[in-house]
Image (cartoon, rainbow, N blue to C red; front, side):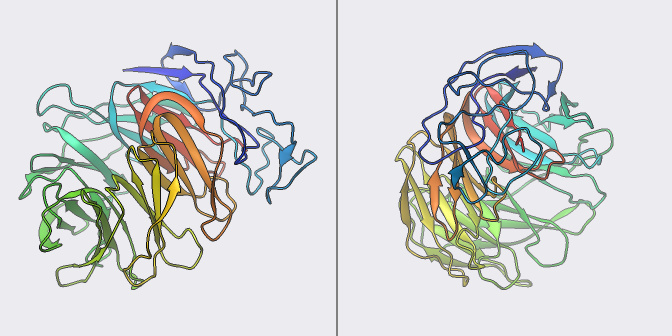
Length: 428
């Protein structure tokens, strides 16, 4: 595994909806570790140029800088001044961790040092062989590889939760056959844990307190039919089969799932997207099997996420239809149902979407990734979503995670793709 700092394109402050795409001057250097406090100097034309200088990259703009309410005028701040401004959108240069064909990445603290780690799942190279690769961040902001763990099965997806409540996040994995594995965290890193077979092929994972007992549980949506199997935890790392919920009369399986309180009752539900476009809300019900509320979609949403985008207190849903250039926005009504889909036109190359307030203005934004592009859709309030100039990564991105990786209080981006893991740190 090679860790490389890639000075590929980076946009800085300001990023406006009508900005042109950022240009790229790609360069990479193999190093022993990646320092997330370094960046690249901006070129004279606003693109990112390879340089020995350190610091944030700032995109040039003849319109001046942008303050928190998106008005333009005199300079009121900029990338790297250390002063966070609501509505400011600044990034350091993209950092590359070179690992071939990464299919999933999650964020958690597996070694209990109160600093986020990255858990990387590369595509398997041989049948029933895969490993989870930790990337650990030290107090100086340097990312280094930890000891990899091979669970003995070909994992398709991973999730992170503290199943045994010991203060160390654990990794949960599912393969496309019928295996469920756990890899407990410890001060020494990942360790071997539970291995068991479930009842059918899954390949998807969700984590939440589905039975309302304050312990984390596992949901495993089927990829072959619209069913979710639930495994309950009791706080010591053990899992027991609990219940299942099924969308009866439908034959297609699920392609993605997220958790949240979609009914407003304070319980954790699961929203799953099917291969024929249904969005099913599996409603939590302690002591009995979850029920299903069916909502028509609008094409197969292979990537979904949920957040309160319009500020009404109910979870809304976004679904990305791959290859169509369409992102569907469905407003939640707070009772387990969703309003009709509103299509948004996006780049047809986009493969994943994540929701989070990346510009720190109090509104939940969207971040899309696909091929060599990352694009923020800024939320100006009440789900008024507008695209910004895309960030070029040259990494073949397929998964996007939003997480706070350092102590500046601002969200950062983690991208899994064909060329490895790209880390994009915010730069106030």
